[in-house]
Every structure is written in C-alpha cells, then in structure tokens.
Amino acid sequence: KSYAWAAACTGDAFEDRVVVAMDGEPKGLFAASQPPEGAVPLSALGLVPANAVAASCGYIDGDKAHKALLQTLPSIKEMLDNFPRPPNAPPPPALPDLDAALKAFEARTGVTVNGLAATLKGEYAAYVVPAPGLTTQAPDIGMFYTCTDPEKAKTLCAAIAKILGAYF
Image (cartoon, rainbow, N blue to C red):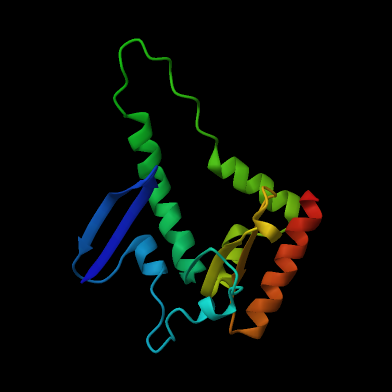
C-alpha cells in the first residue's frame, strides 16, 4: 500500500490538499519515485548545507518519469480542453505545442530529452539557505542529483554543458 499527501501553508494555517492511498504496485510518476530495493533512504539529505531552512529530497528514475509524463500529458490536455467554463468567460490561452517545444530544445542543444532522462536514476535534493545576516537579499537555492553510474554521470554533465552553452 502506498500513501501520497500534498499540503499547503496558507497564511498562518496548514491545509491538506490531496491525500491518496493506493493499493498494488506503484504506477506512472509514483513508480518513477520509488528507490530500488536496498537503497539507503534520504541519504541525499546528508549533503544539504547545515544552515538550510528548507530541504526536500527523493528518488527519481528519469526513464520511468519521462515515459509516465508522455502518457499523462495528453490526458491533462484533454481535461483542460473540456474544463467547464462560465458562459461569458474569455477562451483560455492556447497551450504550447509540447512536441514543437521539445524538438526546438533538442535542435538547439543537441541533447535529446529521452537521452537526458535515461541518465537520471538516483537521489536528488533541493534546499534553501537564507542570505547572510537574514537580510532581504535573495536566498541561495540549491539542487543536486546523485549518480552512482560514472558513465551516466559523464553523459549527464556533458548534456548540462550543452544545454548551458545553447542558452547562455
């Protein structure tokens, strides 16, 4: 049995948004977040800076996540297209053409999304560290991914370099 929960802090209150209990094997994006048998849970948290005020970590199987997203996006588009609208409401903005955007990204960077997703299989973490002195300056926001396969790590680093080179 699996349990998923999403919540939000609204002002001074804490509010549950979605609570789901699932029987059987995980599917879709939930399956992509399941670490393999014997993995040390939450070991990425040990790499988060000690002065972080917020942190989140998890596991990602990029290949499974990519396939799940490709299966899920058409149903999301269908749901948005069929969402009931008030009679005098303006039409919703057109959704971007995901296929065209992915092809443009791949042409510009030389990196395929499928190839990039295949390199991701491991723990990740994101964190927030306040600016020194708790000033109003922007905080440091960090994110990292751990990769135990040296060849996939090299491939991922090369892909990130290509992406950065294409856009910056």
